[in-house]
Image (cartoon, rainbow, N blue to C red; front, top):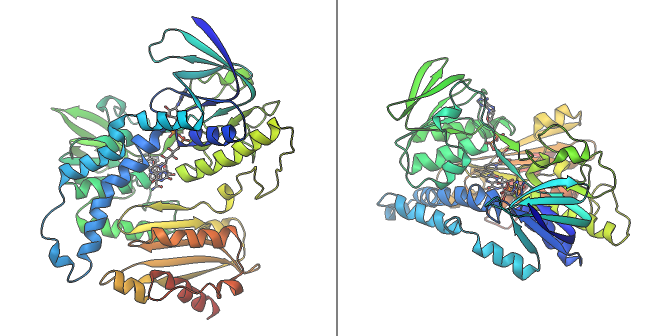
Length: 476
Ligand SMILES: Cc1cc2nc3c(=O)[nH]c(=O)nc-3n(C[C@H](O)[C@H](O)[C@H](O)COP(=O)(O)OP(=O)(O)OC[C@H]3O[C@@H](n4cnc5c(N)ncnc54)[C@H](O)[C@@H]3O)c2cc1C
Ligand SMILES: NC(=O)c1ccc[n+]([C@@H]2O[C@H](COP(=O)([O-])OP(=O)(O)OC[C@H]3O[C@@H](n4cnc5c(N)ncnc54)[C@H](O)[C@@H]3O)[C@@H](O)[C@H]2O)c1
């Protein structure tokens, strides 16, 4: 039954990190904004993705860094306290309570309606509350932003859905390490969760469909992560074909081209699917579900009237929190500009468009070694027909890296546009390389000429001296 109708300037469906940021920008722009959230305010990142996964990994990383320095290594005499690591993870998820985030919305002046939102007409959203009772109708004067995110995609393997597989949600929230963990997939989630749960006591087997880990990144990245996981005892089976799944006496049994494999749990980490089901998209003439196509200012493509936006994972452009929040800032600015009757600038790098999605997306895989990358890989530059040169340098030869860890092993790979003499992409593989990434991102976004990069002198003795070695190698 619908009893209430409320009018706002902006309605945001989905209160994950991205929805929160759209709302923050529109409220700051003077627009009355409401967020509709079906589960927990904060979304996947806060409770079942970035934060808990990195909290699970951090202890292992800290120990590994200490063990790599002779002298300091002698102080590491025990094993990781698994219960304390899980408790620290729980604290980062606020034990799956969203009071803190709800309080933040209130202080920011953003209204919250709990329940599942669905378009019922252009600019109208019906919200069904969690108890399914009284529906609320919200009306938007200016814009509706769909920020409903993504969920784990479970492949159609015979019996798989029936064995109640772990998805990223269970893998990041489990209260104990399974004895034997089977993982289907070889991407970000698979590699990070194999690293985490192996270190916390599970025997891990990875079943990877492709011929390497982390297929979208430089091949050296997947090779380095595979080498390290194998050395630590993880069983990695490349080009694996999982055909069926069943439970027998509580065990999971996967039927593969190489025979049956048994485990206590199976994690499905084979990518994501957009959360667009039951969103009422037929109202805007869309019959199919799946990622929502958007224009450069994050408006849903082909919808009349400049009122419907899709921001974050749900548009499938870049499935990363920081990129979703960037899109939120850009889309939020476009919504505010349109509401004020101002022109929206659709040219590259304007305040209203998400150009970095296409040219300069940074990401870090928090494995051991870490993989930090931005912009194009060599293969992507070749596919795009860009004249380019690849420069590689072993990071372990840099003084700062040798100080950081005895026998530091790592690689930096720069992809240089040889016509314009600017950086197209950079990948760092090695311990603690995450913090090197922002410099590379600035160089790619700013299209800093190589001749000017020579003047960006890295401090001695830091790992950043890798920049100097790469420039010297490029000059020859
Ligand atoms: C295991 C894992 C680790 C990750 N680690 C990182 C990392 O380290 N760094 C990084 O940058 N990215 C990471 N990611 C990716 C990151 O989690 C996502 O890019 C990010 O959460 C997307 O944010 P979002 O707001 O678009 O969607 P979500 O976080 O999915 O939020 C969408 C929200 O919408 C709500 N919702 C859905 N449908 C409706 C509806 N009809 N009505 C009302 N509400 C609705 C949901 O309940 C949810 O709260 C990781 C992902 C996974 C799976
Ligand atoms: N540190 C981070 O920033 C971080 C961490 C985790 C996730 N993420 C984000 O979340 C996204 C989703 O992560 P993900 O690991 O689920 O996806 P992914 O796209 O990174 O990897 C999916 C993997 O599954 C394999 N695969 C796909 N279908 C399969 C099938 N039917 N059978 C067997 N293997 C199959 C692919 O070959 C690939 O190896 C990532 O792309 C990333 O954007 C980011």
